[in-house]
Length: 215
Length: 233
Image (cartoon, each protein chain N blue to C red):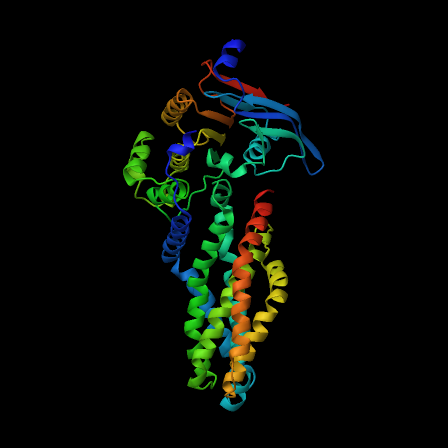
C-alpha cells in the first residue's frame, strides 16, 4: 500500500514536520507531523481546545509556527508563499461573507480577485449545492446552513488544489453533508487535497481518507 | 499545475473589483457614510457658538477650525475602514488570496477617501463661507483639503490596520495617528491662511502634495505588514 502511494506520488504535496505552537503559556501543538499526498483527505480530530484550528491556521500561513517546518511541494514555507496561497482555499469558522451583499455578489467578489469567473459558473455552483434560490438574496436573510453552503461554493469556485476547511459541515443538514461529501470525493478524484478539522468524520472508510489525532 | 491553466485577473482589474465592492456596500450603508460629514458640519458650527458670532473674529480662526474639524472627521471615519472586513473573515480571505495585500488595502483606502474625504473637500467651502471666509479662498481651501485628506486617509489606514484587532481600539488609533498627522495640518492650515492674506501658497501646497506622494507610495506596504500582524492573532 505504502509502496503504491510512493509510486504514484513520490513526494508529499504538503508536509508538516514537528510543528510546535504556544498560545500564551500553553504549549498547544507538541511536534505535530503529517504528510498529505495528491488525492487525499486528512481529518484532524481531537477534543475542543486541543489546537485543531491553530494547526490549520499555521499550515495556511495565518499563524507563524514557533518550531518545526511546513513544506509545500518540497519548498519550505513561507518561501513561495504567494504561489502556495494561489493554490489554497481556506475556510474558517466565520464564512467571510458580506451580509449586505447577495450570495451571487459575494461569490463574484470573493472569487474574481483570484481568477476570472463567469456568472453562469457561479450560478452552476450554487445549483450544485442546492442554494440557487438564494443567489439574489442578501446573505443576511439566509439561514446559518445556507450561508455555510455559500462559503463552500466559494471554496469550490477558487479551483484551488488544496482545501483547508475548519469544521466545514457546521450547520449543514444531512442533505447538505451528503452533497458536500460528493464534492470532496470529486475533488480527491481530480488529484486535489483536503485538510479539515472535524468533529464528525466525512467519507469514512473510503480510500485516501485518513485521520490525524491531536492529544 | 492547476493554477497555470486558470486566467488570473490583472492588478488593475483587482483594484477595480475591490473599489466596486466597497462602493456597492457604501450605497447599502449610505447613512453610515454620511456620519463623518455631519460630524464635520456640527464641529465647525460649535465655534461661532463658543467664541463669538462676529465674522471678523471667526474669519481669523476659520482655516484652523476647518482643518482640525476635517482631521477629526477623517479620524472618525477610520473605524469603518477595515474592522467590518476583519470581523466577518473577508480580510483572512484576502490575506490568503495570493494577491498583493498592499494593493488590495490601497484600493480599499482609495475608496474610503472617495466616500469620506471627498465629501469634506466639497463641503468645506460652504462651511467656510459660514465662518466668514472670502470666496477667493475656496480653490485653495478645497485644494489643500483634497491633498491633505488623502494623506490623512493613508496614515489613518496604517493605524487602523495596526489597531483593528484591539478591542475598542479607536482611542488608541487616535493617539497613534494624530501626532503623525500634524505636519499635514500645519501645511494645510498655513496655506489657507496665506491665501486669505493674498500671499502665494505654492510652498505649502507643494509640500502637501509631496507628503501625499510619499504616503501613497510607501503607506500600502506598512498597511499590509500591519494587517498581517493583526490577522495573525
